Each structure stands twice: as structure tokens, then as C-alpha cells.
Length: 158
Image 1: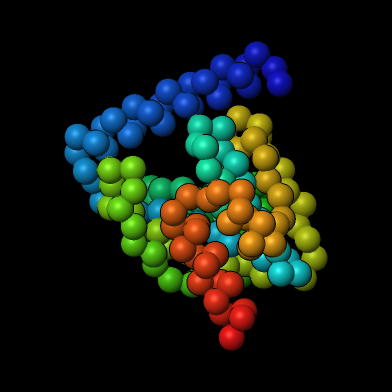
Image 2: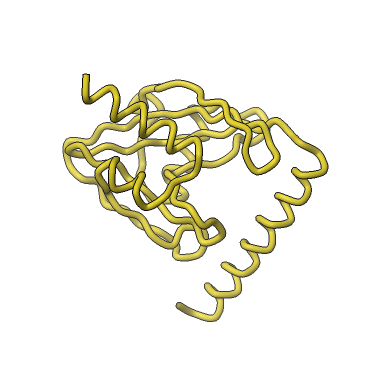
């Protein structure tokens, strides 16, 4: 890891903690988009440099942006996967209260016949890999991703 990467990671950790402190005071309602990329029963999981738990490609909506637009953008920014809006199937919204915010997490699914190449910047996203949902849950994931994966497992067991 270069000194620049280490500096950016440190700045991201500080910014994330400042955001949490602001949320503690403000208690906002936030909107985000997550993308579950599936290939042969495995799902793409990522590790952000500033969080302790794993997640999926995700991020907040920019002003005027739709959840689908944010999902496409975040997928490209975080793991280098290009997808058209039409390729993403809307799974639904998961509401949680976490980190002092009411989180409206919009989940999309991308089902791939071939495993897509994944590229992380080693700054915001430090690791990405395809895991069985059970393995992802065992590693520890953020709350909304845990709810989504538990639902996905219950759908496949029916």
C-alpha cells in the first residue's frame, strides 16, 4: 500500500466518524442503493476501508438521483462493473435504524452468467470477492445486507 493510499484511507476513516457524529446530533433519514451481484449462487461482498463489517457495492443517492441511478453509479465506482439500469432487478427497500440514522436501503440484483471482473481502488474499497451467502453472513455484514441475505437464503430454501 502506498503512502497516498494509506493517507486517503485514514482520511476516509476520520470523515466516516465525523459523519456518524453529525448523524448522532441530527438523526437524519438517508436513502441508499445496494447492488447484490450474483454468480452461480455466490454474491459479491466488499470491505470498505472505514467500516468493520462487510457490505455490498452501495452508496447514498446524490441530489436528484434515483435509487437505480445510484446503484449503477456505485457498482461502477466501487468495483468497476458496468451495468445498464435495465440489467438491475429491483428487489425492494429495507428500512433500518442504524448508526443514528433511519436508513432506506434500496436493493437491486444483478445476475451474471459469467463472473464479472472486479476492480477495487484499495482506498475506499479494500477487498471484494464472491461468497456463498452463508459465508458472507459468517464474516459479518452491515445490518441491511444481513437482512437481505437472510431473505435470499429463505427464498432459495423454499
